[in-house]
Structures are given as structure tokens and as C-alpha cells.
Length: 123
Image 1 (tube, rainbow, N blue to C red):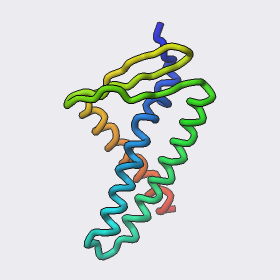
Image 2 (tube, helix red, strand yellow; image 1 turned 30 degrees about the vertical axis):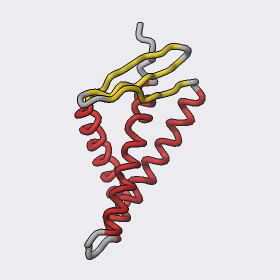
Image 3 (cartoon, helix red, strand yellow; image 1 turned 135 degrees about the vertical axis):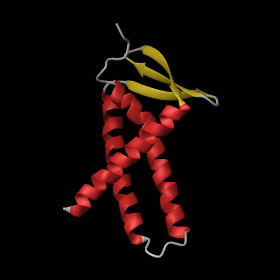
Image 4 (tube, rainbow, N blue to C red; image 1 turned 90 degrees about the vertical axis):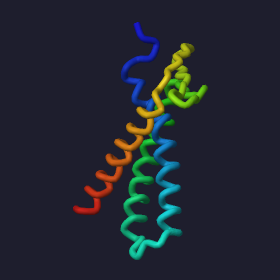
């Protein structure tokens, strides 16, 4: 029997990916504002919308983790893997994620947030 219930895993992973997404978006926004773009507004608006969505999801994730006494701790990192410790119900579960997988999933999620923002704008 797994120590981490399957319904809790997305919340653990949100605590890995959402802070990365927010860091990337904030960095990109800064680059756009300082960069030689002619029309910065649409890019900034798109990023701000994605940040808003990601922050809202991160807030909900933190509430869920707190209510269920769950915690995520980033452990060792090397060129290939990053290890995370998931704590739930007194159990500790160490999980290793391929860095390439972390990058690819972060990119997928960024696309998803941009699509959500585009959907809001086009209506």
C-alpha cells in the first residue's frame, strides 16, 4: 500500500511546480519590461494573468497541505535528478524527479496557464 494517497500526489507536485512557474513568469515579466519590445502591454498582460492563476492555485494547494498535515521539502539536486521529501500522516516518502521531466512539465503547465488567460481575454 502506498504511503502517499493518490489524491494527495497532485498537491505535492503543485508545491514543486507552482513556485517554479511563478519564478519563471516574474523573471520573464522583468525581461519584457526592460527589453526592446515595441508593444509590451499584451505580453505583460498575458504574464500577469498567468501569475494570477498560478498564485490562486498555489494558495489553494497550501491550504490543502496545511489541512492535511502535508509538507514538501526539496532535498538533494544533481545534474540529473532532484529529490523531494513528501511528508504525510507521519510518513516520509522520498521521490526523485528527472530534471528534464521537471523542466518539461513546467513548460506544459506554463502553456496551460497561458491558454487559460487567452481563453479569458478572447471572451
